[in-house]
Image 1 (cartoon, rainbow, N blue to C red):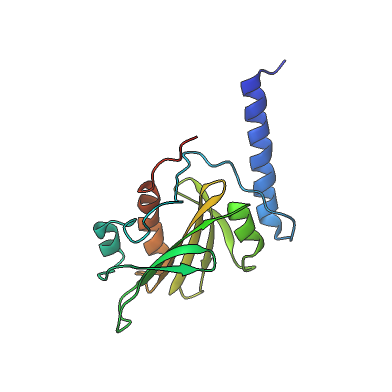
Image 2: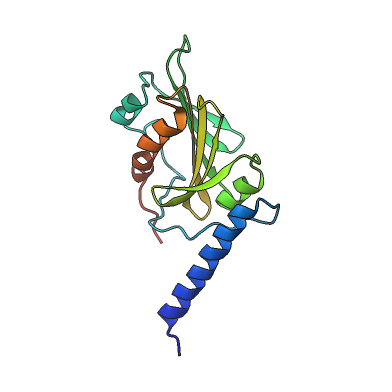
Length: 174
């Protein structure tokens, strides 16, 4: 007879296998998101203060961020004039379905990936000048980060910094 912990582990394995299988099919079926361990709380984060000065410098950004809003929620943008430096945008999406909602509305070329152990969506241009990661930091919270003009390409630059930016968020209280 399987104990409570064994049933939970078996269920988690089935959910993960089903999710991985669904990710590779590319069909329009509702997407599930793997369980999120070490959940973070992005709901009240000051997005313009979220990346440290060192993290911004790693991306080649030397301008302060400006708070704004996007269709998905609160946002901070680091833009330059003239546009010779990388441009960063960080948005918090807090909504029913979290990452699954974003996945259902994503471009067909969007990939399901893991970033620093968190389920995420990756969208980029073929030449690497634009990259966006939508990282599920909690079941109903997604930290969206986009970069234009990163070096050597925008995805590689974001991959080097975004895990630390996610860790800057406070732990989610259960």
